[in-house]
Image (cartoon, rainbow, N blue to C red; front, side, top):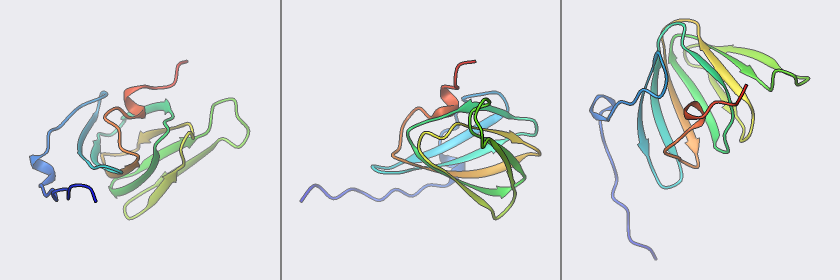
Length: 125
C-alpha cells in the first residue's frame, strides 16, 4: 500500500485567487485524481471556445451561463443556458465556450486535475 494522504479542508475565501482571463476569478483545490474550482464570472465574461482532455462538470450556484458547444463549422453545434441548481457535463475533447449572462458563481469539477485548463489556452482562430 502507498502512503496515506492527508485530508485537506479550507474555506474558499482562504484559497489563492488567480485570474486567467478578464472578468474571471478562480480558486482551486487540486487532488490526485480530480480538481474542484470555485469560479466567479462577472457579467459579460466571454470564455472563448476551447477544449481540453479533462472531463468537466459545471454546477451553477448563482447567475446564468450560456454555453456554446461544438466547433463553429460543425453540424450539431448547440447553445445551452444553465442557471442556479443546474449542471452540465462536458466530455473530454468537446469544444466549448461560455458567456456569463449575469454575474455567475460556478463550481467546476475536472478529472484528471491539471494546473492549466482550457481557459488558459483557447483554441486558435
